[in-house]
Image (tube, rainbow, N blue to C red):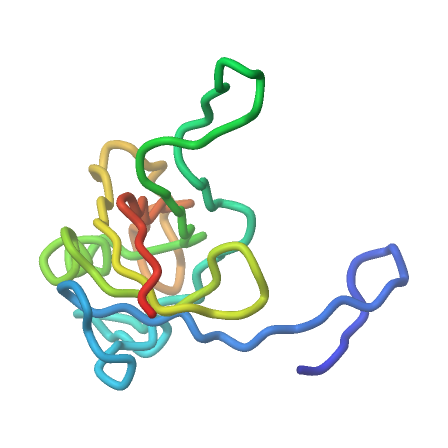
Length: 151
């Protein structure tokens, strides 16, 4: 891990490598997962996805004694700032449904976990016309539900 200056705060923030990986189906071995930025799809390599601060431990409840509690399953969101229409369709065709991922949930240590991937619909996103890639979707959400960390 290297340290690089961040923003105008003048402080140093850690820089983490691109290690988000995905595989179709549950319990895919770590060596069989595809690094997201190496997936070609049908036209361009995928850009890195944003992972921090989008993990939920389940639906928040309050017990009768006032103590906080969680119920249901954990969820996570990854975000792609820009994705071509072909990439979006490739994700739906190849990965939507049960998946295994290797990325961060809540800490700076990556973990392997199963989840259910829902990419939503094209109409959920803002289309933008990129000089480099043509028509793309902006801020695409990789909605992961039923998150279960694997041992």
